[in-house]
Image (cartoon, rainbow, N blue to C red; front, side, top):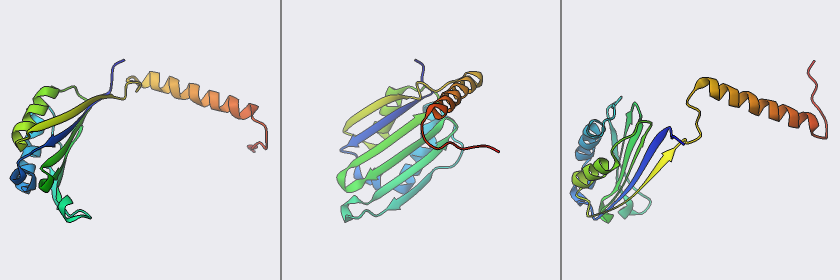
Length: 154
């Protein structure tokens, strides 16, 4: 089955701490990353520093909306770790995206997962309408057969 989107989830270990704590660096990455993987940025990146409940869990988070969905980055500088997600309705070169992240953050070790999203999402409005009608008819039939008090429409 064809999917409606792709979701890359990347965990980076042994990253360069200075890059993980640099708001401007993360902003620049999110500013250029969409174009390098063939996506369309529809707003400037939003990047901010946060403080965790535990002092060592502070970091930087960034997010950019793309026409195809979004890209997000969350860093934990003291742990030299980053989490990066790309969710896109348009196919993209996963290996190129992973390699870009490796270079951008000086990642030593990467774990990544890739999912097809929305594999059962109807791509045609006529088909979607048909499915919704069928589901409503089935629910109405079940409700009609169900024991107990019934609602009356006046």
